[in-house]
Length: 422
Image (cartoon, rainbow, N blue to C red; front, side):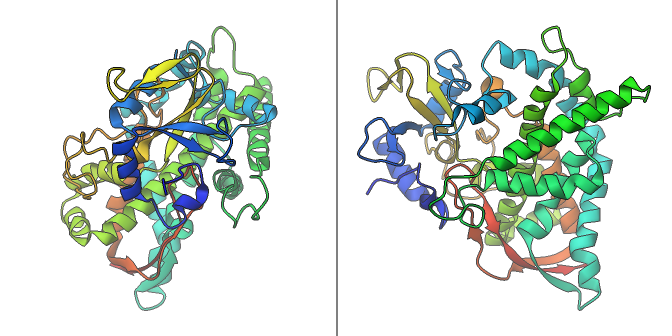
């Protein structure tokens, strides 16, 4: 039976890479059913080849992020309206108008200036969750690496960047978890549709944050030096961003920073435990860590796909060979999980190789929607693993990991480990 990429159960036991590879070779543009396999209109086109994913991503005129949003499910009007206010679901020219004022904050130079503070946050997390508790015992500790360690990094980093009060960081972490895990039975009971209330709650929090900030400034207080101040003070096509629009922006920035970075760190550690030679190399030479981060992102990409909607009839693939005509209005999903293991681009693509070069993975996207936070994510990964290896001597699995039930998020829900500290 052909793998069903729209079914969250497909990924419960991990990613079926062999089946996806066979599908990519047989049907590089594959029609995938959603809830009703007998309804020819209830589905989407899965774009599986690296070159075709690049083509779709770089052609916003034919493939819109805004028309139907960025997930394959059909959203209700209220949810779609909120999604369209997020940068990742904007089309040109609006996308450029909103992205430009933010781009300077996420440059390599600016992100590099944050390294001391991010290193201090990583050390703080490891002290609280690993080293101090371990030293109170016999120098080792059992911990769920996802919830106990990795998830804390982006929560604290994004809280700091956005200027969110420290006492609210845990709330935003929980809202982000609920928002990105809506297909998992631990969050949404079986038989019930995903609950989008967490997105609404987070947007309301963002609106309140913006309202409080503007009131403080109106009373004469100096603007805080953080990302929230930058966004609220920026010129978006001749006027400031409204508080309501900031709420949607806030959801994207906080959720994207939390979810994908947590996955990068936890999936990365699991990959390294499965490849101990790679972990030893990173422990012995920190200069190998940046390359390892790129391979982690390729081999265990945090998101399976992002969706576009065809704005006109268009052929994807070779029009004189295996090209397929996509009709206007049809859903098109760019599958990074497949493209990142395309054997026409990557030698021995199923091999985990931290020295792989070049490594043109698509986990940050490509084109105008290339991830705004890529420099931050790379630096968080590098600093975290440097800090982790500095303060631990051994890390090994203590049980089987549990994969998140999701057709969008390629994430571990739990990664139990035993850590020996130095």
